Amino acid sequence: MSDTRKHVVIVGGGFGGLWATRALASAPVRVTLIDRRNHHLFQPLLYQVATAGLSSPDIAAPLRHILRKQANAEVRLGEVVGLDADARCVVLADGERIGYDFLLLASGATHAYFGHDEWSAHAPGLKTLDDALHIRRRVLLAFERAEAAQTEQERAAWLHFAVVGGGPTGVELAGTLAEIAHKTLRREFRRIDPAQARVRLIEAGPRVLASFPESLSEKARAQLQRLGVEVSTGTPVGSIDANGYTLGAEFVPARTVLWAAGVAASPLGALLDVPRDRAGRVQVLPDLSVPGRPEIFVAGDLASLQQDEGKPVPGVAPAAKQMGSYVARTIRARLAGKPAPPPFRYVDFGNLATIGRRAAVVDLHGWHFSGVLAWTFWLAAHVFFLIGFRNRLIVLLNWSWAYYTYQRHARIILGGVDDKSANDDED
Image 1 (cartoon, helix red, strand yellow):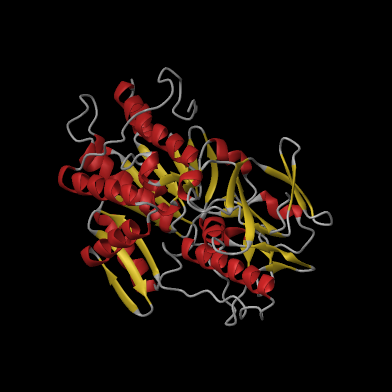
Image 2 (cartoon, one colour; image 1 turned 45 degrees about the vertical axis):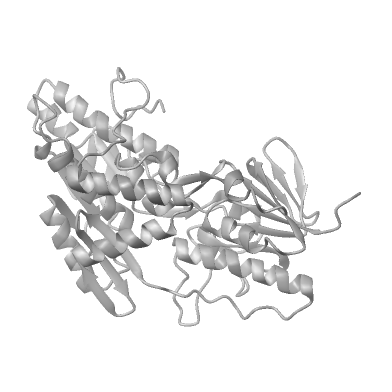
């Protein structure tokens, strides 16, 4: 007997896709969630995996496990490479075509190198667990290479860590790298002093954390400097290669450069014959549908939408969750023959970013605070929003242990160690 329920296909198991799927649990539809990876990732803590503070399973959970009790949801592991909007079907990499009555594209974002894609080989970004493991390997191998270096110049290059981009990810990476050098690796090497490592945060704009109030940006800068991070603002990098980077007229030898400066929308947006912004995000209507295709919705980092006051909906996890839930409400209303919900409006609960141990900044609608109080608030918020009790417990225990010991239990180098450069990835 054929299933007469409407079919909702959701592409992407991130915040937008997963929240939409779960919001349709009691709806008279069947849901197919398609993702290239089998897990949902809590991206706000991805930098902790990259810096060996947490292991991959601590911030990720299998999609099948999350949705095991949702009878109307099916998970498909696959990559969407095509879209036939007239036939209402998506095409997977293996050629399979999956039809839909409603489609939600929530495939997220990738790295953007501002026209210099060749830099990606030398300055990896941080969007996936694979990225995090690659960065972790680079960082740990850099100290090993410095220990084996034959000259001071070579050693200095291995001990120079540059993070390009002064947003939350860049600030978090830089602050944690400084802690690793000054605290975690203390007394573990014989030829080098890890505390002599140079950590530089490079922001092309006038200040770090540009989305925060200027007062908090300045506090973040001061906290970074107290942790030993050199903050450089106002000058963009001019080039990046395997040996270092150019800042202004100066070439700086550095064997570990990390990219946190820009994002671009998932390539899936190009499958739609609709306007997109400069970052490749689909310019959606107020109900998050695609112009001319009311059955197709876009959410999360792939969607571009201006609010009434002219501000764009930011590419952050809370916005993606709200978008996913909104699309589910819209679909339910249509199926029930009820009026559509009011146009989507992002509810901004505030911004927060951690900088390092006992250092963070929080902006809660006019309530600005930093330091230990902000750091405690950041910890509580991230533990609360993790998927699954096990993950919350494990992360809390790991953070508690690290706080008292400065140790990072996930300091394992994957892949071979006999390659010539930490830039070679064998993960």
